[in-house]
Length: 273
Image (tube, rainbow, N blue to C red; front, top):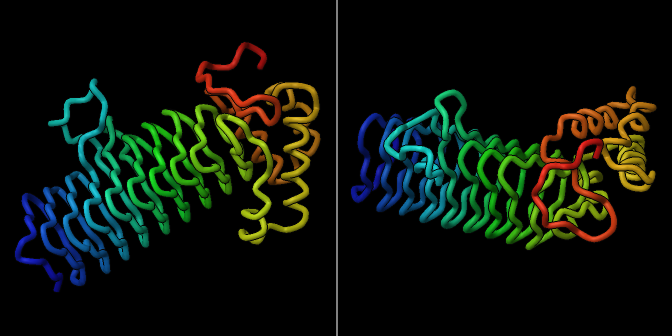
């Protein structure tokens, strides 16, 4: 049987698994479903439509599923809501907003660690096993793959994509797409590869070599990332290189540069860039 503190407020359609713990002064306004083993330590606010999986831990003042910060969206409209996976940790004052559509919810995968005051805006799609340092900000519609580490105070512009295994330096801003296993060393500057992340993920020596080669091809061949696609395709039979080809070919905001001065611009790349 779930344990609900007498000071907690549950309204509407709220479905709790048997061993959910709801601490003091929590407020849950359905429709909300919470899976087995999830704990709300206290003073947590959840608004539906929200689905939370198993084994999650929510610290005080975390807020999940509240209306999006979008002036075009009526906050009284529920929309597609928020879906959260399993074994995530949301520390103090983390905020995750629900979607601005009726088709696809804001989604958070499994095993993510959101440190205090970090934020994921409406319509974000966050993968699994990511770490977001204190005060990390993800704008609306941001896509984050798996095993990304974001340093404290890093900020990501709306509609940006972050590939798997990336590292974002603390306080750095990102308004362009960051390819897999690259490190954001300054605003919009992919200054190196995330070698530590590669090794911790168990990547083979061949995979690491492919990441190094892809980085050099994108940033040291004297052409723009898009213009480097034919060069990358020389090794498209390598799975890691194929991942870079797909990532660069599908960018809409443009890809971070890898040398020279960092750029704060958010404009789309020029034709042929």
